[in-house]
Image 1 (spheres, rainbow, N blue to C red):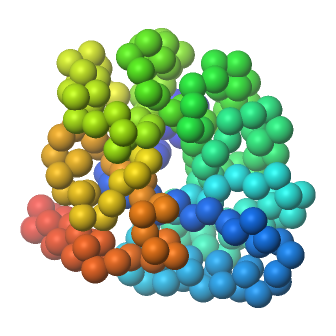
Image 2: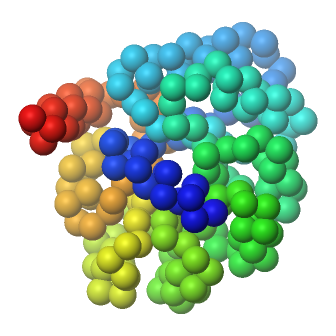
Length: 220
């Protein structure tokens, strides 16, 4: 798990943003939606998005879909979200994913993931779970729901955290707030439902442009 955490931190150091795509409830009943998903991922890549994750689904076809996405879009850092049960964890163990995320802190599920060398980033919403996750060896954590926990919680975490703990904010994040949130202490952010059809809006396009220019400037 150590190497996978370090690898993900490097990826997010290049671009501190993950776009989350959730499948429609009838996704596997309408073949055209598969093509639409691939088109959407292509567009995200063309906009410059480098990190994408797909929400977990209990449909038996979901695993083969994820395998196809991994092969077809191997230029992106790809993971999955909403892994919070043994069923969801077991379904991803054969996929050799770069990472996965959970909305909650479930020590039993997290321990099983560690045993299988599956990076499953827990969702943290209180200081107690934060401390316990660090003791388990986590150096990268998801703060969820970030928009409801607010600035005071991230400040409290910054007072507690060790310097090598990487914090990802998720939940209710809007593209217009990316710059502000990254300046408050988050190392990376997840954006999903707040993006219409999970495609970059005007504010996100501006942020991507500015971030690219900043990276180029820093590399000169």
